[in-house]
Length: 78
Picture (cartoon, rainbow, N blue to C red):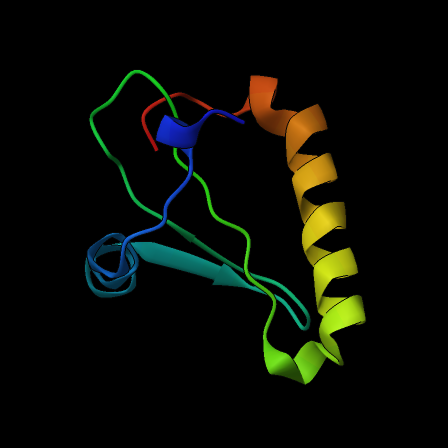
């Protein structure tokens, strides 16, 4: 992923939490919001509930890999 595609700033996350929508399951919650850009911006987080740092990093790597396969099916601008 390119740097422009990754959410890093606290303001970006707060904006998604306040104004975005969410879909949740037992282990994963997806937050999303339109960004009016020609590309999608993403971030992958794992809660401390997941386990130790090794397990959280593995969870993030697996999420990124799944996104890599599915990103062509996601509309740009979210």
